[in-house]
Image (cartoon, rainbow, N blue to C red; front, side):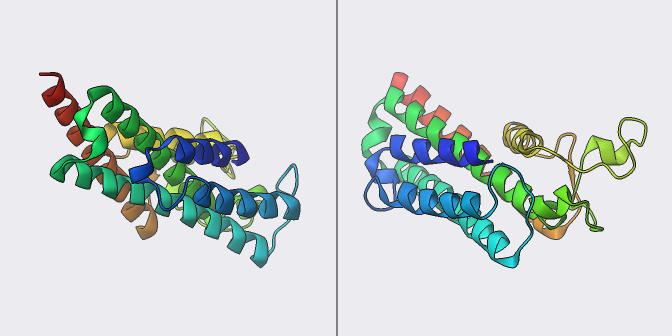
Length: 205
């Protein structure tokens, strides 16, 4: 999870200036401070459960999602009305790729933090209902009855497959928030890929 946040921070720095909120260092600094606070409160492994740590984690994820969605809205606006990066196919594809990957990481972190009461609740096997049904939940023969997603890679995979298929693949949303989040991610991904590819082809031609 920490690695994903660091990757998102690097991608924010790589964004064109017109797609960022404020100076280059603003969002990475905020995200870095929040990440450091989360790690300091529960280093190495998820062993502590506290309202403060969960609040910090949710704020961190909210900042990441907001930054990714902001870049998406600005990029789509530039594609429709014209922007500096839309006149070069290579610049446009680079910017679109960074925004697309940033969204996937941000939504993966959102799923990780909210599913089943959060990562700490899942790690401690607290009696909560799953918000996302993984194959292991649906097929009792491939995992123990009390199986919970143990690693962030499960949610990163969910984010990328949802973004490429524009719909759920092997993980089904059960809770209303999960359905809304996956629908929004699908629409965002469809908008980015469709408009970026169409504009890049137009520039090439």
